Image (spheres, rainbow, N blue to C red):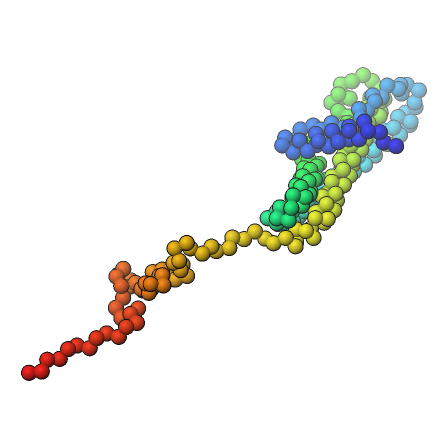
Length: 253
């Protein structure tokens, strides 16, 4: 059973990872601190020390391979998170049209998706802490060198194990947040899809003037017929008058 204190510590570490998005390259914490290797290697033979060195190199190589796998999965989660945020943004205009509960559900779903997205970005950009053996320090250290190298590898592998364990947990929490966001949005989707979209309907004018005339037509009222304007700005002749023109008067001699 996982206690509440461990759950709180896990959530706190995930929060540190999300905040690390705003400071790329910053060193993020781990769930536990590795214990320093304090055992003596004096009783080991040369072959035994070589075995320790070879196993230490294999373990460090495996840790680096696990780090690359973790980053690859985080990149996949980043792609899924971006798609999820896009779907949430598309339904934002109708999320609050049905009622307050759908709006609250949409807000919670969006927050969960953003937290999952922040964890994925942090796994790709934050600095991973790994132990290493400094060749210059070994060369300038006490003899025999083989014993110092074996001791360095035995002490260095602890940091990598804690780093990998923490990053796997952060990736798992990010996936759970993305799944929870998708499930919550799926629950409120029937209400959002059935809600009418907010569109502005044209309102009739209080003056009774129609506004459906084209750009070259003057709006009219029932008492004033529409007049078409010419290109020069004046009224066009003989185009809008519906009454026949009077015939010219003739004078008899």
